[in-house]
Image (cartoon, rainbow, N blue to C red; front, side, top):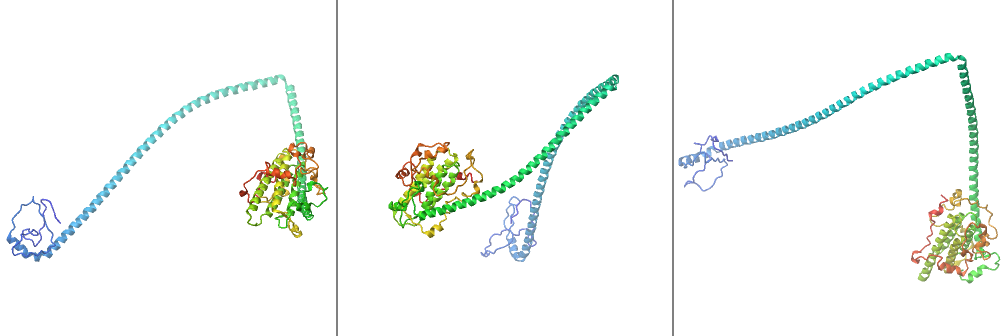
Length: 533
């Protein structure tokens, strides 16, 4: 450690002589060249304090002689000095830290004082503004008070004048009454009393009449409530009866289809009852029947019945019934297409033909759905020939499909198992009898439908269907002249007519991509069920 600075006194160690301890000595001739480390501190004096002096040989020898004796004492003294210096430095550091803390505290105190001063000035300004505002309001209140006092004084004067005038009028009236006499005043009072009594009697009479009418209305409402309850019960009974009758109709239809299938009368019944020869023979000759066929003959029969019923319902007084008949047709088509969904051989030509015809069936079925919906929504204003044409195209497509996949005979045991409950996807709830409680608004003022007459031995569509050779649709539509007919309806079309295939292959139906028609995808539009909701 070196201590610099002029005039700084240095305490000499006890063993040092003449204050020369620690100074470098010149090398002696007889001195050993071995350097012995000395842990003593070296003290350097400033050149400005003292000049350079020549080394004294006597002093150096004395120092060499006494260095060994005083080495330990010098070390202890140096350590004491170092400890004192260390303590002084620590005190100096602590004092500097304390000074910095004091400066920080002083700065924070100054900042707080400045903020308090600013806050105080702001509050003073706010108080001054508030005082000025209150003084202004006080001045306004005083002005208002003065004006109110003046107004009150004026009103009092007017009131006193009015009271005086009324007193004068009362006095004049009393004076006039005393002058006219008591007889005239009594007669006027009696007349007013009689008039008031008469009005009271009239009011009492009106009140009594209103009370009687209210009692009559209450009694009538009770009777209507009782009748409404009985009407609801009767309505529930009628709904149950309708549901039971519809179940019976469905059961008899299944029995009729089974019986007709067992008799093998595969030709449509709308051809007329005069055909006595065996229709199954002609079907076999045309190549429709095959023991390895895919479609059950009972399903073909149900399709024929559904088509006839659709055409018959289209010529009734309730066009809404066409929707239910159309659904039965779609269900019948679904049965037929479900029969051909069995694994087939790897004949690519057969698969392509089947896919093409199934695409045609799907397209014509969708056209039939659209025509039925338009006919029902238009309340019969749409020509019935459009519905006949759509049914013709669907029947032609089904006949073409049956000619490809063939019809097989249904065994008797399978006729009992087939109850006709197959429905397309998303068709649940469409055949509920209770759902027909609320009629559609599209019917307008149409008359109610005729009562159920049962299933007779002859088809009702024999004289009205467009498939009938005995009469044209124009003739059958004469009783319903309110519905416009098209000229195209005069052309007789049928299931076995060759023109049906031409119409199905022509402009009457839209052709779909056979690759996109792997299955019949006939979905009921949501608008078809608007009257069921």
